[in-house]
Image (tube, rainbow, N blue to C red; front, side, top):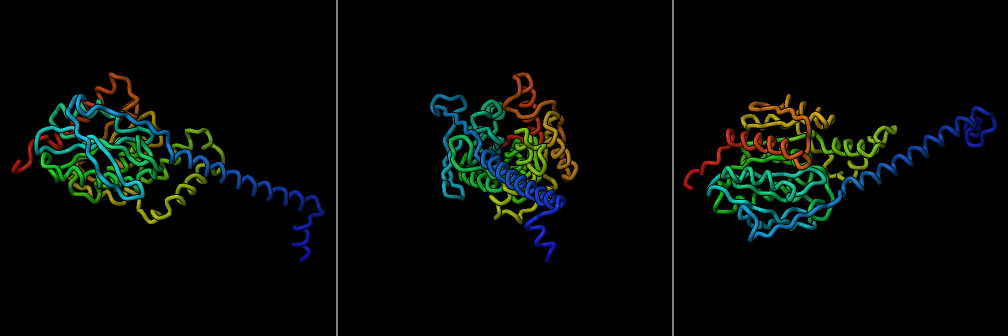
Length: 313
């Protein structure tokens, strides 16, 4: 009883010191949680950029494709660029803080080789409101986009290739593990679990070095996505992709995502390839590196998913 009384009303120097230390730890923890919560809020609501094009005059004769996705704001619009009638469709999945409009040069490179190409914006990006979940909910968006394209009469409805960068790469692999319509994948700077991307973004703020800050941010993000707490890491489901060609792109200047990409490559079943590049993020590459990147993407799909018309087309 005297011990409890001393802790509650400290009179000795060492109990006062202990009480002050506990109070300091408590308030430091509260401050860390508050800052982490604010960081996560800023991270899941990225700055949105939107590109508009004139469908009547833009090269490639694109069509606007409307489709619905799960959620309160279910309406989406994407751009479909036609290739050979009955050819496979390549869907380009943009990265975090990017948008479909930033992928138009890659679209042109693929369409020039007679692929059908489709681009759209994920939630919280481009013209779309909402927040990002770094792949949990966005996987359903990719599936909805594929379902919409498969309804067209000028594509092979059972033949898709997917390219994705970080957020887009996670979504591409997540959908491919259960969707047999996907026959080729390019996965640039992929992560195994969405919380990894939160850690990457926290480190960019300069606050990742503070004790427990990154972990507190991950916990805040997990709380926001509590309904996905039972979702398994992508690497646990990789065996389902045996026989599906995969090109992993590892960027040397993105340390954590580069390491994650290499680990996913090692765990992945054949057929698989690994390309190690000096710089990541296609949309920010200088023109010469961008052209080389586009050539690598086109070459992979030409070999692994030729743009020949499907049966009966």
